[in-house]
Length: 240
Length: 144
View (tube, each protein chain N blue to C red):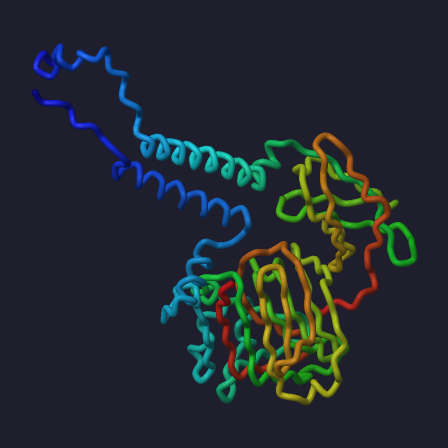
């Protein structure tokens, strides 16, 4: 007589259900804790010795020829030019000018990044009482919403601002030496989570914390009466 | 069950056999899958509570307060509820009241011209959250 064979243990379907369930639970926990799954994956790959990680994107700007400015967007682009291998913005004495780079932002797989500027010079181009200096947009939606790190060479201050609908909320500030006006500056900005840190020549100069904007574009901004030039600029994703 | 698969009388010589136990491993698997499903539902719930959609569904509240400058003089200000399209202005005495703000923690931007200050408040459903008197900078250096 034939007997029906008994089934012992799990089938493949049960194992698959358990694995899928564990994966969903892990993803949900990371989501609740505010950790990007992509960044977590990238961190693991990097730690395991992976040569490249998709989330480790980088934008590097070369200003050797005029095409180096093609990806920058903003009004009055004629004020932005290449001079001796550097990107220069000429102030008109009236309004500050912002140029954002959406291409760079989309190629970065992380919202945490380091912006490095080399060989920045700021000089007064228009003799009036308006401000001079070079600023950096980060996590910006447009030129009225986002974060700004500013260097004001007229008042000798560096500041972090949060800009909402064109209204400026000061996050932090620090006085800097007036000798900066005559220097070629190397500035680095770390944008990591809610914490922003600015460095000059590797020395920390200012910190701020805010969690309003989680993503957005990077950009540069020249104050009304200055001519500001940048030698090299790099934006490199940070893995958590 | 077909007649051929039916047990013979010899199978019942020691009495009726008890029904076979469900295998332990099978039972454990079921428990794990059900446990994971419960956990997923729980986590989805937490995730939803953290979302903006939940605060919209949960209800709305009101904020109010007075804006003054550094000299404690009333000033007319603009009010922006960050992350929403809600905008308002105060009256000449600096008094402002903004309705229909999603409940939960909100960033309130209070601006005099281009310069602003921020107040973080927790808006309660159906209630008015008093900000009191808010000093708004009017003479700060702005980096235009």
